[in-house]
Image (cartoon, rainbow, N blue to C red; front, side, top):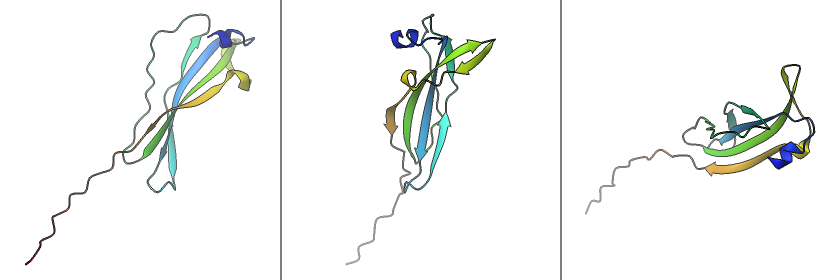
Length: 109
C-alpha cells in the first residue's frame, strides 16, 4: 500500500482477476475476468474473493491486475501511470481432459 500512497492523486485501488483460456492445440484462446473490486487507498480492505469462470479441457493462465484510480467530481478516472499499475501471472491451471474408455483388445490364440 505504500507505493499506492506515493502516487499523487490516487484515491482508489482496483483489483481484478483475469484468465486466458487456451484451447487444445494452442490455436485459439478466450478470456474471462472477474468483477473489479474498488476500494479507497486510505482504508485497509478486508478479505476479498475474485471469481473467474473456469472452463474444461483448456489450459488457463490466471492473472491479477492492480491499477489506481482518482475520484474526480464523483467519477472514477483511471491513472495512466504505468509505474503504479501491475499485472502478474498467479497460476497456470491445466485443463481436465476427458478420459476415453477403451475396450481391451481381444487376443485370439
